[in-house]
Amino acid sequence: MHHLVGVAEVAGILSVSNERVRQISETYLDFPYPIAELKSGRIWAREDIQEWLKRHSDRGTDVVARSKQSCPCWEVPCENIAGPRV
Image (cartoon, rainbow, N blue to C red; front, side):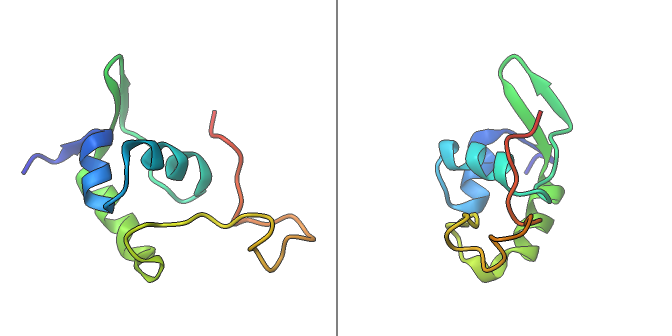
């Protein structure tokens, strides 16, 4: 197994679609930043993705980001909600 992974491999590790990987990476503040962004896409360290999944194992395989409606602290600025990363 290679130590570098792209979107398709991350999707496999998380048991989600490629599109869901994009959503998760843009929503969760603690999702690992890619170590490189190539013309073919983003690349992460497999270990970083596996560690992130361990921290979020309580959410099951289809990790769902918190929304304004589901976050109990939606009336105040919430650290669980993030906009797209730049």
